[in-house]
Structure formats: structure tokens, C-alpha cells
Length: 132
Image 1: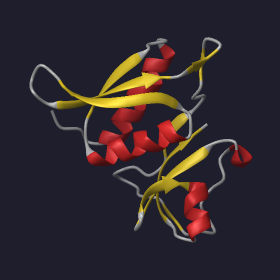
Image 2 (image 1 turned 120 degrees about the vertical axis):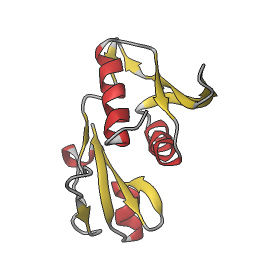
Image 3 (image 1 turned 90 degrees about the horizontal axis):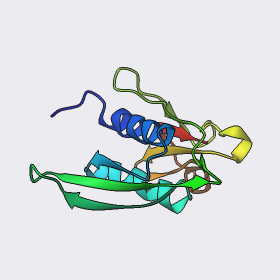
Image 4 (image 1 turned 120 degrees about the horizontal axis):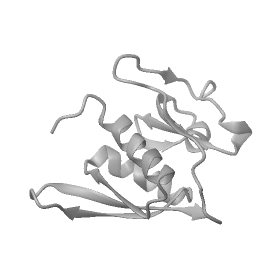
């Protein structure tokens, strides 16, 4: 199965899983999605994830969603840069999400990182998504 926007699909699966109060969701595996999930885990938005093979022998990520007192930890997760319209930002113009309470995930020449890390290293890149 091919996706027009695999990152947007993953974010939609996370959002839909949390709306349904699911404990785990499946996401097709890729290196780029794994790096985004690493950041979400490190920043405390999801519990953890692991890679498994499904029935069709394809790799999937099993993502453990995180809740706080019954409500999802992720209030908003949205795609910024889309396949039809890429959004790039310099280190100075990377957006602050909810005055620093949320994160933007940025794909830079030095890898995928949070907006804060990109500002510290003074590198810009493509703003993938925002999480709050």
C-alpha cells in the first residue's frame, strides 16, 4: 500500500487512536517515521514504540499512546510541511509552539530534531509537524 503523505498518515493514526482512547496503534515502519517517534518518546508525548512484523511480513511500529488522568497527553498534532507545499525555516524563524510549551519537529541537514535543538545548533530545515 502506498501513501501520498506517509508522515501525515502516521500523525492521523496517532490523533485518531487517542480520540478512541486506544492503548496501542500500528504504524507502517520507515526510518523517518522512527526518528519522529524517537522525538515523541524523548519529549514524553508517547510511552514507547517497537518494531514488529505483521501478517504480510511487513514491518510495523507498535506505538504505546500516553494518557494523563484519562485524557491524551497530545492535545494537538498537525502536519506543517506537506508534499504539495513544503515549509522551510531558518534557525531564527522556526516557530515557537504555544510559547515553548509544545514542540515543532524539524528535518535538518544534521537529522530530525526538535525546534529547540535546531535553534541551539543554529540550523534551519523543513518544519515537519507541530505537537502540543
